[in-house]
Length: 166
Image (cartoon, rainbow, N blue to C red; front, side, top):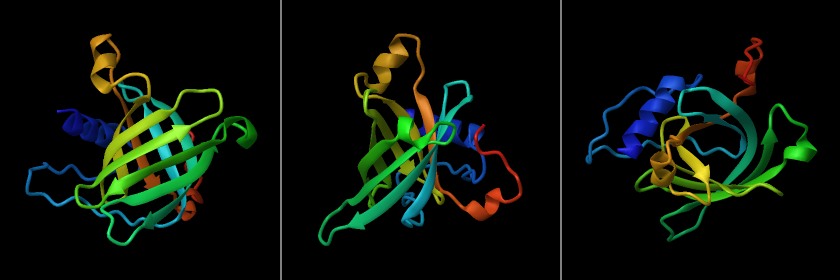
């Protein structure tokens, strides 16, 4: 249920490129986004669809022979903050067989943020939380899981003056 709900929320609120709605069944193969090293955008939303922040992330992907995981490593910063004060490191892995992403964003004085989601044709979508609470614990306390979208940043698309800062 969390998987389907987070996917639908990401589709509802995400800015372009927005994934096409697809009904997921056990026989669907996971989407295979183009995992190009470079600048990616990570957009975080509230449970009501408000864009909370947009992060610029320089990502690298490394697939090891004989492994069922693709390692993700990178660093980045919030678009509306100076690089020095909001720099973070991001690490994790992608399971190419299931399309599942698991990422951790580490900042200096803030708890780790955990992103768990699934591949789509442009990148990934899913839910995120601080590392101190599981998804359902926050829901039981009246707070909703928060949704994220991650996609490869195409700087040519920004040349038309579109504001990605939300």
